[in-house]
Image (cartoon, rainbow, N blue to C red; front, side, top):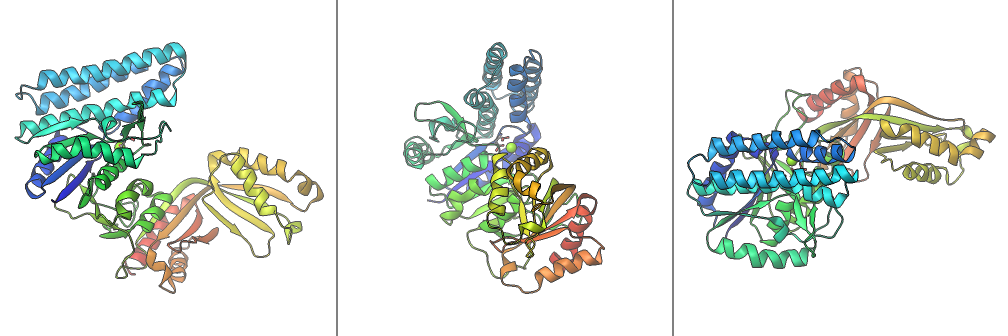
Length: 469
Ligand code: ASP
Ligand code: MG
């Protein structure tokens, strides 16, 4: 029994035209796959708006959530009017939209009174976006002749109670899916499941973290023993670089899980690696495809890197970073300085993106988001107060407006000379490299450059190392 699980992201179901296109894709696939499950996100921007409504209400603003309500009502009504005018269902769909948004408003009203929004309340509030879209998509499929029903993932995906970033409990989830989803599939129904949301065993609504619909699709794909999982988005797949920065950027046909993880960590807009793990670990082929260009095959994500591909596959940049240096001649040979430095960094909750220590041991440098610099520097100065007084450490300082440029590819491990070519490319572009690190995964090389050089650095590495690689 061939099973396909597919997920449509926010822009793929963002307005009437996109939903219509997505429905066409579903209907075409239904001809070729015996069992087909569809997962939908909220329309693009809706989750953000719902959150903003709750947050502004909590901070005493009694107006914003009301205007968000009417904006979202109008937006979804337009979809109903545009796509389902004659379906005989439009009245009940409009009522469904109204009911979901009325609930949102009621919640925001209470939050406004309480002056506080808990993570648990937030999860309930944002669930409206996915719920509305699942209802709309299922109705659209019915109108076009398919058997389809909307299914609320709170009935399928059982999670722990970590609101806003819940972890699925796979055994009960598997059981629920076998009980509720499999019979529908056996009857030839196309279930349209809400992405992003789940519920605890007690039935409290949870969410799987921002962008969590991919995770929903992976969980369903795993539990249904899907033959494939397809993630529909608004770009052709994963690209060799951000096309806004590098016009020559190309589609990457195949990527390994480790490469995806590295790319996501270093700022590329791809799947969150945690979310796709269930399918990749089971060896279920996963594809990223473009709703607006469905004939393009997209990017295939596989478990292990294949040999045939080039050494470097993609180059990314992360902005708004600073480099912090702890410097002093008295640091040499003194154990524990690094450990204490990073304990101080961690105590401020800052995440370190890159570290390098000169072998002379006279400085430790690391890169952190710029907005965390003041508190991190203060924490290190407090921790090292004695060393600073004795002048074993001369200073703790930071350089702002830094960017990490990362070249990613599993082939880096096996191909000598890639680092040299990467630096050569930068030298050709007359770009100064402030610091360097190679990840222990050996799947990436990262360079720190100043913000003004970042775009050039990305282009140089892309065109010299990837295209000519
Ligand atoms: N709608 C949710 C979000 O914006 C989930 C998703 O889009 O995957 O985070
Ligand atoms: Mg989204």
